[in-house]
Image (spheres, helix red, strand yellow):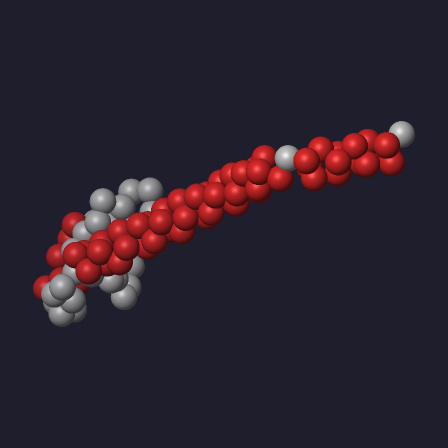
Amino acid sequence: MAPLIRRSSWRYLWRHPWQVALAVLGVGLGVAVAVAVDVASGSAHRAFELSMDEVAGRATHQIVGGPAGVDEQVYARLRLQAGVRPSAPAV
C-alpha cells in the first residue's frame, strides 16, 4: 500500500509544482519569522539590561541582611566611617 501512496503523491506533486513551491515558501517564511521574532526579543531584552546597567550602575559588592534586613545604624556606619560613600540601599 505504501508504494502506491508514494507514487500517487509524487504524481500529484509533479502535476502541481506551484502548490509545492508555495507550500515550501510558506514553511520557509514561517520559520524565518519565528527566528526573527526570537532574535528581536533577545536583542531588546539585552538592550534593556544594558541600559539599566548604565542608568543604575553596576554593583561591585552586595550586603544581604537576611529576613530582618540590615540595621540602619550599620548602613550609616558603613557609609560614614568605613568610607563607602557611593553606597545605596536597594529594595
